[in-house]
Length: 167
Image 1 (cartoon, rainbow, N blue to C red):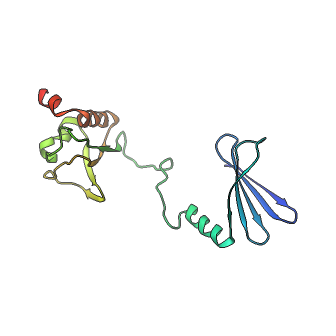
Image 2: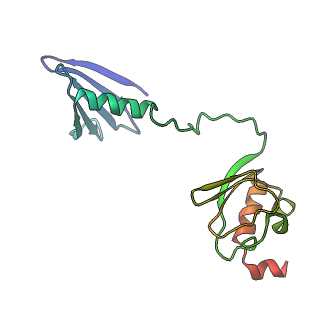
Image 3: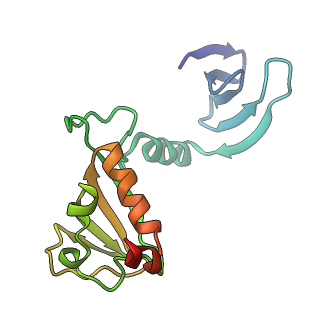
């Protein structure tokens, strides 16, 4: 990302940050500490004012953007040595064959090759669920496996009980 800086005589400094395409975010820092944020869609378009902030509020916003309050995982920078394996989050729909069965009864690993490493059930996370953990509709299964194995899991979870009984 390129940042352009210029002085605005009698006002302060202007910073322009390149966004997607020709769009830019413009930040004007006044000598008195006030900050103004603008969005400029293109080089020949007028800027639209987004916000005006005091110095204190600008520093608070900067802290939030920097990650002082919450540090997300940057997925495009994440490097986990899993080989061909990937981790997916897949929702269990009502009527899916595993609903009401334990992990052992559903035999997800045997049928698909993935390993269920966690289950997200509402606000609760069941880490390393044991084979006796029952699967409920609405659960989100966190599974590790290859793309092919993940596709098999999705297919299994999207099947209906009648399709499952026929196989």
